[in-house]
Image 1: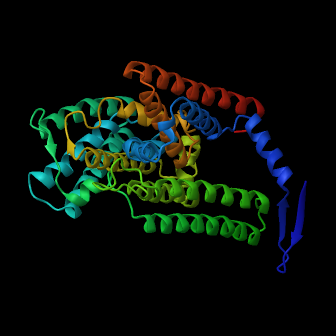
Image 2: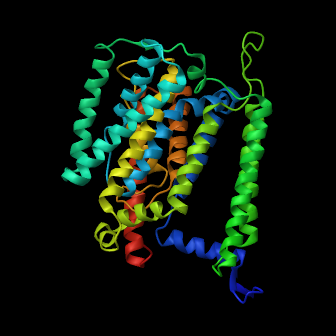
Image 3: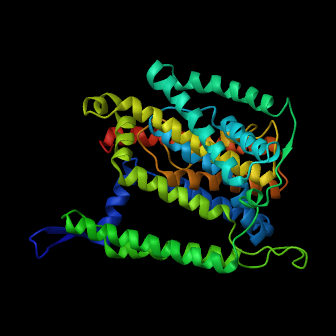
Amino acid sequence: MTTTTTTAGGVKVVKPTVSSYINDYWGRVRGGDLGSLPAILGLIVLSLIFAIARDTFVSGLNFANLFNQSAQVVFIAMGLVFVLLLGEIDLSAGFASGVCGAVVAILLTNHGWDWYTAIPAALVTGLVIGFVLGFLVAKIGIPSFVVTLAAFLGFQGLLLVLLGGGTNISTRNEFFNSLNNDNLSVTWSWILAVVAVAGYTFAQFNQMRTRAKRGLVTDPLGIVLMRVGGLAVLIFVATAILSQERAINPAINSLKGVPIVVPIIGFFLVLWTFVLGRTSYGRHVYAVGGNTEAARRAGIPVDRIRISVFVIGSFMASIGGIMAVSRASSVDPNTGGSNILLYSVGAAVIGGTSLFGGKGKIINAVIGGAVIAVIDNGMGLLGFSSGQKFIFTGVILLIAASVDALARRRAATTGNR
């Protein structure tokens, strides 16, 4: 049931109860709107299995490594969410990240550039790549599968050319290498945690206030408090774990604090979530992904939107490449290759982004990336071979795609689209 109150300005505000909110959410789930629920449940189950099977899985050292190891996949997956929202695909994202990583490494090592000029150059490279891909898809009319498959092959060759046929280029810039290897101090880790919780709390209550002021339905206070409390517990527990000493020999090298890459991931998570959820551009992306022709007739610049998602996708791929090079302190012909693309697409889809367009959020990339990282890390700790890990990850991806297809069919039959 719901309650209705009237403000001093005469605006009627509908306030659903916690029970009605839960019933409505359950109805959406039964109607096929699953969102990230399967991925979250899978992440919990997998984490419990690996924690029981190998106690080192829940150690502070391994917990921190999960963030560093998954950074490249998570950043690329964030960009792929935009592309997938339009029902398109970018098969070149992995090697595009490798090319951008090679650019920053070459400028740092071979040409003596500093990090604050080399990193922007790599980011601009990503933007140019995305624009070219988007232009070929939107203006020339070549299917994205063909364009990005050609780019996949081309960038693989370009990476070899940039590296002189197979040379490994090391990066020695201390700040650059710290991006995906070092940690914040314990003090700054806790400051970051408090700021994150305070910011989320403000955003939730500000949204309630804004919707109430406009006479729109607001989430029950109890639900909002549960969200804030749940996130606070998650962040504070994680910060407490990461603030403990995790070095084998602290006298030689102390390891404490939240990895530097975590606030970088958090920044882009907040940025792109805001763009998709709170701007007209984000609404246009969903509109084009949901029904391109209807969006065109509504006056939305469809071609510009299509180009822009590839630009964002390649831009995020460039950040993924930068983080990969920082992690390894070097770049080689396999940077961005191997299973990176498959894991990145898998992260977006496993997290809840639809392959058919029109449905997905940036948080899907982070959750899906966590699932991929847990599978890869946990099975590695248990001694599984690379082949077994690939098979298991492929099965998980197939299950996620099947859930998406069945959910869409369910939504179509119940009218919940």
